[in-house]
Length: 163
Image (cartoon, rainbow, N blue to C red; front, side, top):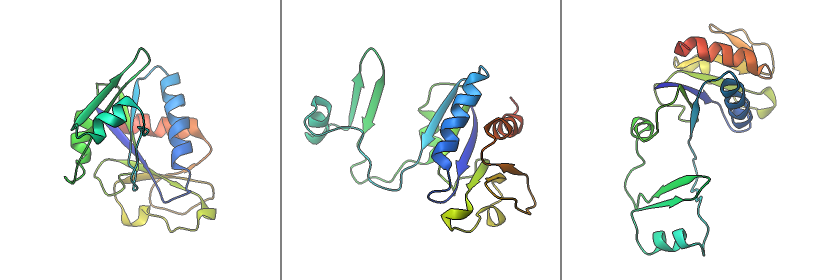
């Protein structure tokens, strides 16, 4: 599968850009899946539900299925977080996987950058960042795209991955 990432510091606009890119690229007829990295403890299950009770009882994996979706929850129980490659191997085939976060992994990325967030650019120190989507003009050694021009960012990503 082809993969491309969106990275950036907190409040740089990553999630909004991801949302717009998924809509733009699927609107062009491509299939897209996403992988999102969370730096905090996250739980998609709620106390009191049957599936939560299964997990709390010690189940290693709980697969929750309905007519609308399937969710698999796997408890790490102290084992290391799986590498990105292992996570990607779990996905069904699609045209493109967009990855939010995972800034230290080797896949190609676009950096979301908002000046008001107050962070320095990652791109000068990270060769996997192929372009920067910014809300201000920047002088860089790689393309700088308008953070709000989703179509142009999608064009760039699709060209980079050969779609």
